[in-house]
Each structure stands twice: as structure tokens, then as C-alpha cells.
Length: 517
Image (cartoon, rainbow, N blue to C red):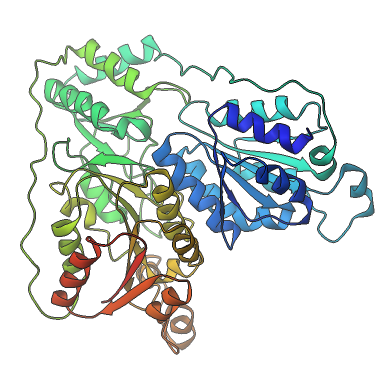
């Protein structure tokens, strides 16, 4: 057994059996070790951002980390954007990054780089294997860190000689994972006091406080105390739809968010951050809460959020005798025929999506209203871009489909951000994943055209338009998808989209609809 074998055995002993990979020469002994482990499913991504984006989507649904395999510093650099998104989603992830053999680093070969320094800003934990004998301990430390709290992004640097050297270390066993922290009784008492003082209060939640059972506890607290509750603007996963509690998100546009939170005197944070603008805008506030609003962060990073909500419910007397108000299933009528609009697309999606679908949303501007339109859709999980680094959507849907092969995955995808990582379509085809991707094809970076106005810049002239429009030539998504092995169709009317999406829900395997809006 060599160090790479021990790494694989340690992953498997702890239930980590999926590896999204884009390897290189430094990782060949790890590749060979994986080849000796049929229990590990190895999935190739044709770009490292696909690899980490898929690992993010996988872990959000599987509730355990996947491993990734990345090639030295440049491969890690290609992967960083979706590591950033995963970190914002509090996703557990173990990135294995190959490095030169330790004794070869002194020669400063072309691929030599500061991998530790590159990894640190996008990782919650960074470790380096020093030799084959301690490989199991280093891997266990990475697993323990990944499963701390709601989840952390971890990077394990694997020198080639640590991988290929033989070891007589014992076979690994499953390790004890960190227990989540109990809620702080003093903070719970403070929150209960705030909820009883008669001031206008909003409870902001995210993370595992957005699972169905947690939302039921939250609604009972709100019913008992008269408080409002909202999700933060970007969240890793929300369990929603028919039979579940409805929850609104903080709006993305600053003016809408300020209006939605006007008059708020107190804010209680449970796994969420206080709402702020995505960017600074001239003449507009950075905080979406009114000046002077009292803010209490009720939980620490590693606190069990469901336990925290239950403790707060107990403190305010919000018992299970309080009736719940749950969404009722209601499918909309077919959209009116005519030119295709984002609203028509979203109406058809809600109209035909199956029960227990997984929605992966990177629609950016075009699909912004899907969330409020789908409260009464069939029960589903809603995954979205969390860190603002576009290029997450198609890989995220890919990983979610690997984690949940018996559920339909629907990707709502902006065309501009889709081009960052469209290679993930190839992975969907190779793995025959049940994903339907809807591309909102407005052939421009629509959100940036809006941002140009929001920051007070001039109306776009020729140079600005050439940086923000996706035409001359136009992107041809049907051809791009088919070139990756995914069947596709392009539609430009509401009735054509209605028919195409209804048909797509009856198919198995990857399919793409280009919605020309």
C-alpha cells in the first residue's frame, strides 16, 4: 500500500465515495490508487471550475463531501471561483491538489507555485501531506474539518512522493465527526427577550435553518411573537413548495431590499448574515436595514441551527399546538401564446416540474422572480448561486444529479454565465445524468447593463456594448449542447417552450432548451 492507497482507504472508511476530477502528471499515483478502488465513483470534468462546482452541488444534496482531484497550483486556480461559492454555501468539500515531489520543489519547475497561498482565501482548512505514513492522519484531519459545523471547504495538498511512497500504516477506520455546538443559552434568552419587547423584528435565517422541519419551527415562533422571518438573499439549499412553509428572500436590488425592510427595529440572525448590498452604489446605503436597527447574531458558526430554533421556540412558548400554514399545490395555467418572456418560461417550469425536483438557479436577472412564483409548486429543493462567482449553475446541477439520481434536476441558467463552464454538459452526457437545462438566451450580460445604470455610469456606448452584449456572433446553444453530447432544442414562443418543457419532463438523461427571450 502506498500513500495514495491510504488516502483512498481513509476517504472510503468515512463514507466519501465520489471524486470529481481533472488530474495531471503529479496526481498519477492517486489516479492509479483510485483505479484500484471500484467503490469510488470517479467523474471527469473538462475544466476545474466544473469539478468544484459539481462537488458543491453534490454535497448540498448528499449532505456529505465529495473529493475533488486538481492538478497543482494552476489547476487549483481554475477551481477557485466555485470553491468561493461553496464556501459561501457552507458546503463540505475535500479538494485534493497534487504537487511536485517534495525534493523536486527546489528546482522551480514550470508548474511550481504557492499552492498553500492560493488555497487559503477560498478554503476553511488547508493541509499538506508530509509523507505516506501520516497520510491517513492528514486525510482524517481534512474530513473532520469538512464536516465541522454546517460544512467547510478543505484543501489537502498531495506531494507526488507522499502519494507513491510505500507505507505500513494500519488500515483506517471511521473517525468520530465533530458534534455541532449546542445553542448558547444566553443568546437564546436575549433573542426571546427581543421578541417580547414589542419592537418590529425580523428573523433572518440561512443554511440548515431552511430545511422543511426547521421552517416549521420558525413559523411557529413568528406566529407566537408577531415577528417576520426571511431567508438571506443567497442560500445553499431551501426545502420549499407544496406542503412546506413559505419563506421570502431578501431582494437583490437595493431599493427593493430597503423598502422590504423599512421600519425594522430589530434583527435576529440564525445562520444568516445581516442583509447588505451586493455592491456599493453611489448615494445608496450599504446595509439594507434601517439605521439604528439592533442586530443579534444568535448562533456561532458551528451551532446546530435546528437545535437553536427549537430552543428559541421553547423560550417564547411556541409549541407544536400552534397550527402551521403550509403551501398548497397550485399549478398555474399555461402562459399566453406569443413571444417568449422570462415570465412565460417560469410559468411553464412551475406548471410541469415533478414532485421532488431539484432546481439549480443561476438565471441571474431573467429568473429572479422564479422564487416568489414557485411557492405553490410541487415540493422541491432550491439551490442557487451563493457567492456571486458566475459559472456555478451547470456544474452545480451536474453534482446534484450525481447525488440524487432518482430525482429530476432542472437548471435555470443565464446564457452569459453558462458559457463559463458549459463543459459540464459533456459530463452530464458521459454520466447520463437526468438534468434539464433551461438557458435564458437574451444574448447579453443583462445584469451588467442594469448595474451600469445602478452605479450612475453613462448609458452604454459602443465600447461598453461590445463588453456586455453576446452577439456578433450569437451564441448557438443547441449546437454547443449537441457538440457536448446533449440533445437540445431552441424555442422563441411561449407555446413552443410550454411544449418543449412538458416533453423534457418525460425524458431521462440530459436535455437542454434554449429559451430565446
